[in-house]
Length: 411
Image: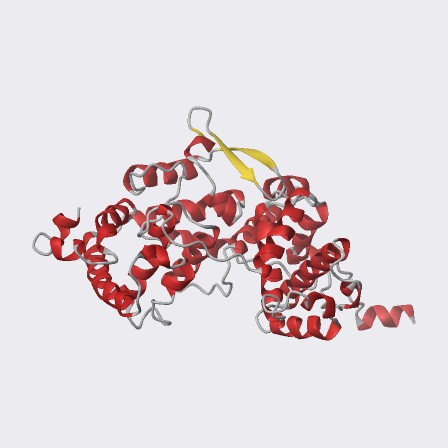
Protein backbone atom coordinates (compact mmCIF):
# COMPACT_ATOMS: atom_id res chain seq x y z
CA UNK A 1 0.00 0.00 0.00
CA UNK A 2 2.91 2.37 0.70
CA UNK A 3 4.09 1.88 -2.88
CA UNK A 4 0.65 2.88 -4.16
CA UNK A 5 0.46 6.20 -2.32
CA UNK A 6 4.13 7.03 -2.93
CA UNK A 7 5.07 5.26 -6.22
CA UNK A 8 8.38 7.12 -6.59
CA UNK A 9 9.50 7.58 -3.01
CA UNK A 10 8.22 4.49 -1.18
CA UNK A 11 11.72 3.02 -0.89
CA UNK A 12 12.92 6.21 0.78
CA UNK A 13 10.27 5.91 3.49
CA UNK A 14 10.83 2.17 3.94
CA UNK A 15 14.53 2.87 4.57
CA UNK A 16 13.88 5.19 7.52
CA UNK A 17 15.97 3.71 10.37
CA UNK A 18 13.36 3.88 13.16
CA UNK A 19 9.89 4.03 11.57
CA UNK A 20 10.62 2.59 8.13
CA UNK A 21 9.98 -1.09 8.98
CA UNK A 22 6.48 -0.20 10.26
CA UNK A 23 5.25 2.18 7.56
CA UNK A 24 3.76 -0.42 5.20
CA UNK A 25 1.64 -1.86 7.98
CA UNK A 26 0.88 1.63 9.27
CA UNK A 27 -0.52 2.71 5.91
CA UNK A 28 -2.67 -0.44 5.70
CA UNK A 29 -3.93 0.27 9.23
CA UNK A 30 -4.84 3.85 8.33
CA UNK A 31 -6.75 2.66 5.27
CA UNK A 32 -8.64 0.10 7.35
CA UNK A 33 -9.60 2.93 9.73
CA UNK A 34 -11.15 4.83 6.83
CA UNK A 35 -8.54 7.57 6.40
CA UNK A 36 -8.58 9.06 2.86
CA UNK A 37 -5.48 8.89 0.72
CA UNK A 38 -4.39 12.52 1.07
CA UNK A 39 -4.37 12.55 4.91
CA UNK A 40 -2.58 9.18 4.78
CA UNK A 41 0.10 10.59 2.47
CA UNK A 42 0.58 13.61 4.71
CA UNK A 43 0.94 11.39 7.78
CA UNK A 44 3.64 9.34 6.02
CA UNK A 45 5.42 12.52 5.04
CA UNK A 46 5.29 13.77 8.64
CA UNK A 47 6.67 10.39 9.75
CA UNK A 48 9.85 11.19 7.86
CA UNK A 49 10.45 14.32 9.96
CA UNK A 50 9.48 12.46 13.12
CA UNK A 51 12.00 9.71 12.35
CA UNK A 52 14.78 12.31 12.06
CA UNK A 53 13.89 13.80 15.45
CA UNK A 54 13.76 10.38 17.09
CA UNK A 55 17.27 9.61 15.83
CA UNK A 56 18.48 13.04 16.96
CA UNK A 57 17.36 12.21 20.49
CA UNK A 58 19.14 8.87 20.47
CA UNK A 59 16.16 6.60 19.77
CA UNK A 60 17.17 3.63 17.64
CA UNK A 61 14.08 1.45 17.98
CA UNK A 62 10.40 2.15 18.67
CA UNK A 63 10.43 -0.47 21.41
CA UNK A 64 12.59 1.83 23.53
CA UNK A 65 9.66 4.22 24.02
CA UNK A 66 6.52 4.12 26.14
CA UNK A 67 3.27 5.54 24.78
CA UNK A 68 3.66 8.63 27.00
CA UNK A 69 7.20 9.21 25.76
CA UNK A 70 6.14 8.95 22.12
CA UNK A 71 3.29 11.41 22.72
CA UNK A 72 5.84 13.97 23.90
CA UNK A 73 6.94 14.32 20.26
CA UNK A 74 3.54 15.80 19.36
CA UNK A 75 3.25 19.60 19.54
CA UNK A 76 1.43 20.89 22.66
CA UNK A 77 -1.11 22.60 20.42
CA UNK A 78 -2.37 20.25 17.71
CA UNK A 79 -3.12 23.22 15.42
CA UNK A 80 0.54 24.24 15.54
CA UNK A 81 1.45 21.31 13.30
CA UNK A 82 -1.67 19.34 12.42
CA UNK A 83 -0.08 16.37 10.67
CA UNK A 84 2.84 16.10 13.07
CA UNK A 85 0.30 15.79 15.87
CA UNK A 86 -1.84 13.41 13.78
CA UNK A 87 0.99 11.03 12.91
CA UNK A 88 2.25 10.83 16.49
CA UNK A 89 -1.19 10.02 17.89
CA UNK A 90 -1.94 7.56 15.09
CA UNK A 91 1.38 5.80 15.65
CA UNK A 92 0.68 5.53 19.38
CA UNK A 93 -2.60 3.74 18.59
CA UNK A 94 -1.01 1.57 15.90
CA UNK A 95 1.99 0.56 18.00
CA UNK A 96 -0.34 -0.04 20.94
CA UNK A 97 -2.24 -2.62 18.90
CA UNK A 98 1.02 -4.22 17.79
CA UNK A 99 2.33 -4.28 21.35
CA UNK A 100 5.78 -3.00 20.39
CA UNK A 101 6.00 -0.08 22.81
CA UNK A 102 7.56 -0.45 26.24
CA UNK A 103 4.84 -0.82 28.91
CA UNK A 104 4.54 2.16 31.20
CA UNK A 105 6.11 1.55 34.61
CA UNK A 106 3.55 0.67 37.26
CA UNK A 107 3.64 3.54 39.72
CA UNK A 108 2.24 3.42 43.28
CA UNK A 109 -0.64 5.61 42.12
CA UNK A 110 -1.60 3.22 39.30
CA UNK A 111 -1.42 0.22 41.63
CA UNK A 112 -3.69 1.84 44.22
CA UNK A 113 -6.19 2.98 41.59
CA UNK A 114 -6.24 -0.54 40.13
CA UNK A 115 -6.93 -2.03 43.58
CA UNK A 116 -9.74 0.44 44.13
CA UNK A 117 -11.24 -0.36 40.72
CA UNK A 118 -11.28 -4.07 41.61
CA UNK A 119 -13.04 -3.21 44.87
CA UNK A 120 -15.72 -1.20 43.05
CA UNK A 121 -16.28 -3.95 40.49
CA UNK A 122 -16.22 -7.03 42.72
CA UNK A 123 -17.47 -5.73 46.08
CA UNK A 124 -19.65 -2.76 45.19
CA UNK A 125 -20.86 -4.17 41.87
CA UNK A 126 -20.63 -0.85 40.03
CA UNK A 127 -21.14 -0.51 36.30
CA UNK A 128 -17.98 0.00 34.19
CA UNK A 129 -18.87 3.63 33.45
CA UNK A 130 -19.30 4.36 37.17
CA UNK A 131 -16.00 2.68 37.99
CA UNK A 132 -14.31 4.80 35.32
CA UNK A 133 -15.62 8.05 36.83
CA UNK A 134 -14.57 7.03 40.35
CA UNK A 135 -11.09 6.03 39.19
CA UNK A 136 -10.56 9.31 37.32
CA UNK A 137 -11.29 11.40 40.42
CA UNK A 138 -9.10 9.24 42.66
CA UNK A 139 -6.18 9.24 40.20
CA UNK A 140 -6.39 13.03 40.12
CA UNK A 141 -6.45 13.20 43.93
CA UNK A 142 -3.37 10.98 44.25
CA UNK A 143 -1.50 13.04 41.67
CA UNK A 144 -2.52 16.22 43.53
CA UNK A 145 -1.04 15.04 46.83
CA UNK A 146 2.11 13.63 45.19
CA UNK A 147 1.47 10.00 46.07
CA UNK A 148 4.00 8.69 43.53
CA UNK A 149 6.80 10.66 45.19
CA UNK A 150 5.82 9.69 48.73
CA UNK A 151 3.97 6.39 49.21
CA UNK A 152 3.38 7.27 52.89
CA UNK A 153 1.55 10.45 51.94
CA UNK A 154 -1.85 8.94 52.72
CA UNK A 155 -0.95 8.52 56.38
CA UNK A 156 -0.52 12.30 56.69
CA UNK A 157 -3.54 13.22 54.60
CA UNK A 158 -5.80 15.65 56.48
CA UNK A 159 -8.91 17.73 56.01
CA UNK A 160 -6.94 20.72 54.67
CA UNK A 161 -5.47 18.59 51.85
CA UNK A 162 -8.87 17.29 50.87
CA UNK A 163 -10.48 20.74 50.90
CA UNK A 164 -7.65 22.10 48.74
CA UNK A 165 -8.33 19.38 46.20
CA UNK A 166 -12.07 20.08 46.27
CA UNK A 167 -11.34 23.73 45.49
CA UNK A 168 -9.53 22.57 42.36
CA UNK A 169 -12.54 20.44 41.35
CA UNK A 170 -14.96 23.30 42.02
CA UNK A 171 -13.29 25.42 39.34
CA UNK A 172 -14.67 23.18 36.59
CA UNK A 173 -17.75 21.56 38.17
CA UNK A 174 -21.18 22.86 39.06
CA UNK A 175 -22.66 22.12 42.47
CA UNK A 176 -24.42 18.94 41.35
CA UNK A 177 -21.29 17.53 39.68
CA UNK A 178 -19.14 18.55 42.64
CA UNK A 179 -21.54 16.70 44.94
CA UNK A 180 -20.92 13.52 42.93
CA UNK A 181 -17.17 14.08 43.08
CA UNK A 182 -17.24 14.43 46.86
CA UNK A 183 -19.32 11.26 47.11
CA UNK A 184 -16.57 9.49 45.12
CA UNK A 185 -13.95 10.79 47.55
CA UNK A 186 -15.94 9.58 50.56
CA UNK A 187 -16.22 6.13 49.00
CA UNK A 188 -12.45 6.06 48.44
CA UNK A 189 -11.71 7.11 52.03
CA UNK A 190 -13.94 4.31 53.33
CA UNK A 191 -11.96 1.91 51.15
CA UNK A 192 -8.67 3.22 52.57
CA UNK A 193 -10.00 2.89 56.10
CA UNK A 194 -11.02 -0.69 55.43
CA UNK A 195 -7.53 -1.42 54.06
CA UNK A 196 -6.04 0.25 57.17
CA UNK A 197 -4.17 2.75 55.03
CA UNK A 198 -5.59 5.69 56.99
CA UNK A 199 -6.70 5.95 60.62
CA UNK A 200 -9.22 8.80 60.34
CA UNK A 201 -12.54 8.71 58.54
CA UNK A 202 -11.90 11.74 56.31
CA UNK A 203 -15.22 11.39 54.54
CA UNK A 204 -17.10 12.54 57.63
CA UNK A 205 -15.06 15.75 57.71
CA UNK A 206 -15.96 16.86 54.18
CA UNK A 207 -18.88 19.18 53.66
CA UNK A 208 -20.86 18.84 50.46
CA UNK A 209 -22.55 21.49 48.30
CA UNK A 210 -26.23 21.95 48.94
CA UNK A 211 -28.31 20.74 46.01
CA UNK A 212 -32.03 20.85 46.68
CA UNK A 213 -34.49 18.49 45.09
CA UNK A 214 -36.41 20.04 42.20
CA UNK A 215 -34.56 23.35 42.55
CA UNK A 216 -34.37 23.58 38.76
CA UNK A 217 -36.97 22.91 36.12
CA UNK A 218 -36.25 20.20 33.54
CA UNK A 219 -34.50 21.61 30.49
CA UNK A 220 -37.33 21.39 28.02
CA UNK A 221 -38.05 23.16 24.73
CA UNK A 222 -41.34 23.64 22.90
CA UNK A 223 -42.40 20.67 20.79
CA UNK A 224 -42.79 22.74 17.63
CA UNK A 225 -39.15 23.79 18.07
CA UNK A 226 -38.15 20.12 18.34
CA UNK A 227 -39.94 19.37 15.07
CA UNK A 228 -38.35 22.42 13.45
CA UNK A 229 -34.90 21.18 14.49
CA UNK A 230 -35.52 17.80 12.89
CA UNK A 231 -36.90 19.48 9.77
CA UNK A 232 -33.81 21.65 9.42
CA UNK A 233 -31.47 18.66 8.93
CA UNK A 234 -30.29 18.25 5.35
CA UNK A 235 -30.68 14.53 4.61
CA UNK A 236 -28.99 14.60 1.22
CA UNK A 237 -25.65 13.57 2.80
CA UNK A 238 -24.62 10.47 4.73
CA UNK A 239 -23.99 12.56 7.85
CA UNK A 240 -27.40 14.21 7.56
CA UNK A 241 -29.19 10.86 7.29
CA UNK A 242 -27.31 9.52 10.30
CA UNK A 243 -27.87 12.63 12.45
CA UNK A 244 -31.57 12.76 11.59
CA UNK A 245 -32.10 9.09 12.48
CA UNK A 246 -30.27 9.44 15.82
CA UNK A 247 -32.11 12.58 16.90
CA UNK A 248 -35.43 11.09 15.75
CA UNK A 249 -34.82 8.11 18.07
CA UNK A 250 -34.33 10.50 20.99
CA UNK A 251 -37.43 12.55 20.22
CA UNK A 252 -39.59 9.49 19.51
CA UNK A 253 -38.60 7.23 22.42
CA UNK A 254 -36.72 9.49 24.84
CA UNK A 255 -33.57 7.36 24.56
CA UNK A 256 -30.38 8.39 26.30
CA UNK A 257 -27.31 9.17 24.20
CA UNK A 258 -25.60 5.99 25.40
CA UNK A 259 -28.63 3.92 24.38
CA UNK A 260 -28.72 5.38 20.87
CA UNK A 261 -25.05 4.73 20.09
CA UNK A 262 -25.28 1.22 21.61
CA UNK A 263 -28.04 0.10 19.22
CA UNK A 264 -26.93 -2.79 17.04
CA UNK A 265 -28.32 -4.27 13.86
CA UNK A 266 -29.51 -7.22 15.94
CA UNK A 267 -31.67 -4.95 18.11
CA UNK A 268 -34.06 -4.19 15.23
CA UNK A 269 -36.61 -6.86 14.36
CA UNK A 270 -37.90 -5.62 11.02
CA UNK A 271 -40.48 -8.39 10.56
CA UNK A 272 -42.03 -7.96 13.99
CA UNK A 273 -41.54 -4.17 13.82
CA UNK A 274 -39.91 -4.12 17.24
CA UNK A 275 -36.95 -2.23 18.65
CA UNK A 276 -34.90 -3.60 21.53
CA UNK A 277 -33.12 -1.04 23.72
CA UNK A 278 -30.49 -2.09 26.24
CA UNK A 279 -30.84 0.28 29.17
CA UNK A 280 -27.55 0.04 31.05
CA UNK A 281 -28.71 2.42 33.76
CA UNK A 282 -31.53 0.14 34.95
CA UNK A 283 -29.96 -3.15 33.77
CA UNK A 284 -33.04 -4.28 31.86
CA UNK A 285 -33.92 -4.28 28.14
CA UNK A 286 -36.90 -2.41 26.77
CA UNK A 287 -39.02 -3.66 23.85
CA UNK A 288 -40.60 -0.85 21.82
CA UNK A 289 -42.78 -0.79 18.70
CA UNK A 290 -40.82 0.39 15.68
CA UNK A 291 -42.55 3.61 14.60
CA UNK A 292 -42.81 3.78 10.78
CA UNK A 293 -41.16 7.22 10.67
CA UNK A 294 -38.22 5.95 12.72
CA UNK A 295 -37.94 2.76 10.69
CA UNK A 296 -37.90 4.72 7.42
CA UNK A 297 -35.16 7.06 8.71
CA UNK A 298 -32.98 4.16 9.85
CA UNK A 299 -33.45 2.30 6.55
CA UNK A 300 -32.56 5.47 4.64
CA UNK A 301 -29.31 5.71 6.60
CA UNK A 302 -28.46 2.00 6.35
CA UNK A 303 -28.96 1.96 2.57
CA UNK A 304 -27.39 5.27 1.58
CA UNK A 305 -25.31 6.54 4.47
CA UNK A 306 -23.77 3.85 6.65
CA UNK A 307 -20.16 2.89 5.81
CA UNK A 308 -19.68 -0.70 4.65
CA UNK A 309 -17.63 -1.80 7.66
CA UNK A 310 -17.68 -4.96 9.84
CA UNK A 311 -19.38 -3.36 12.87
CA UNK A 312 -22.71 -4.40 14.38
CA UNK A 313 -23.50 -0.96 15.77
CA UNK A 314 -26.16 0.82 13.72
CA UNK A 315 -24.55 4.25 13.80
CA UNK A 316 -20.91 4.66 12.78
CA UNK A 317 -18.47 7.50 12.37
CA UNK A 318 -18.60 9.31 9.06
CA UNK A 319 -15.09 10.72 9.37
CA UNK A 320 -11.91 8.75 10.03
CA UNK A 321 -11.02 6.86 12.07
CA UNK A 322 -13.86 4.52 11.24
CA UNK A 323 -15.75 2.80 14.01
CA UNK A 324 -18.62 3.05 16.45
CA UNK A 325 -19.66 6.32 18.06
CA UNK A 326 -19.16 7.33 21.66
CA UNK A 327 -22.09 8.73 23.68
CA UNK A 328 -20.52 12.21 23.57
CA UNK A 329 -20.84 12.14 19.77
CA UNK A 330 -24.61 12.56 19.98
CA UNK A 331 -24.23 15.73 22.05
CA UNK A 332 -21.82 17.08 19.44
CA UNK A 333 -24.34 16.21 16.72
CA UNK A 334 -27.09 18.05 18.60
CA UNK A 335 -24.95 21.14 19.16
CA UNK A 336 -23.90 21.24 15.51
CA UNK A 337 -27.47 20.90 14.25
CA UNK A 338 -28.70 23.62 16.61
CA UNK A 339 -26.02 26.01 15.30
CA UNK A 340 -26.95 25.31 11.69
CA UNK A 341 -30.70 25.65 12.33
CA UNK A 342 -30.31 29.02 14.14
CA UNK A 343 -33.27 28.06 16.32
CA UNK A 344 -33.56 29.67 19.78
CA UNK A 345 -32.46 26.58 21.72
CA UNK A 346 -30.44 27.67 24.79
CA UNK A 347 -29.38 24.20 25.94
CA UNK A 348 -26.12 22.48 25.03
CA UNK A 349 -27.01 18.87 25.86
CA UNK A 350 -29.10 16.48 23.79
CA UNK A 351 -30.80 15.39 27.05
CA UNK A 352 -33.17 18.37 26.67
CA UNK A 353 -34.89 16.48 23.83
CA UNK A 354 -35.65 13.68 26.29
CA UNK A 355 -37.21 16.18 28.68
CA UNK A 356 -39.12 17.78 25.82
CA UNK A 357 -40.66 14.43 24.85
CA UNK A 358 -41.77 13.79 28.44
CA UNK A 359 -43.51 17.17 28.65
CA UNK A 360 -45.08 16.66 25.21
CA UNK A 361 -46.49 13.24 26.22
CA UNK A 362 -47.81 14.68 29.47
CA UNK A 363 -49.65 17.38 27.57
CA UNK A 364 -51.04 14.73 25.22
CA UNK A 365 -52.62 12.93 28.17
CA UNK A 366 -50.11 10.13 28.80
CA UNK A 367 -49.96 8.91 32.39
CA UNK A 368 -46.90 9.36 34.58
CA UNK A 369 -46.51 5.57 34.72
CA UNK A 370 -46.38 5.32 30.92
CA UNK A 371 -43.87 8.16 30.65
CA UNK A 372 -41.71 6.73 33.43
CA UNK A 373 -41.66 3.29 31.82
CA UNK A 374 -40.71 4.76 28.46
CA UNK A 375 -37.91 6.89 29.89
CA UNK A 376 -36.61 4.09 32.11
CA UNK A 377 -37.14 5.85 35.44
CA UNK A 378 -36.59 3.74 38.54
CA UNK A 379 -38.70 5.96 40.79
CA UNK A 380 -42.01 7.77 40.11
CA UNK A 381 -40.43 10.85 41.69
CA UNK A 382 -38.16 11.16 38.67
CA UNK A 383 -41.20 11.45 36.40
CA UNK A 384 -43.27 13.70 38.67
CA UNK A 385 -40.81 16.55 38.10
CA UNK A 386 -42.40 17.14 34.70
CA UNK A 387 -45.69 18.07 36.36
CA UNK A 388 -44.11 21.39 37.26
CA UNK A 389 -44.00 22.28 33.55
CA UNK A 390 -47.74 21.79 33.11
CA UNK A 391 -48.32 25.52 33.47
CA UNK A 392 -51.77 25.51 31.87
CA UNK A 393 -53.04 22.86 34.29
CA UNK A 394 -51.41 24.64 37.22
CA UNK A 395 -53.30 27.83 36.34
CA UNK A 396 -56.58 25.90 36.67
CA UNK A 397 -55.60 24.71 40.13
CA UNK A 398 -54.97 28.23 41.46
CA UNK A 399 -57.85 29.85 43.36
CA UNK A 400 -59.25 33.11 41.90
CA UNK A 401 -58.40 36.31 43.77
CA UNK A 402 -61.41 37.92 45.47
CA UNK A 403 -62.60 41.12 43.80
CA UNK A 404 -63.36 44.37 45.61
CA UNK A 405 -67.11 43.72 45.20
CA UNK A 406 -66.79 40.31 46.83
CA UNK A 407 -64.86 41.83 49.72
CA UNK A 408 -67.62 44.44 50.24
CA UNK A 409 -70.29 41.77 50.34
CA UNK A 410 -68.45 39.80 53.02
CA UNK A 411 -67.93 42.93 55.07
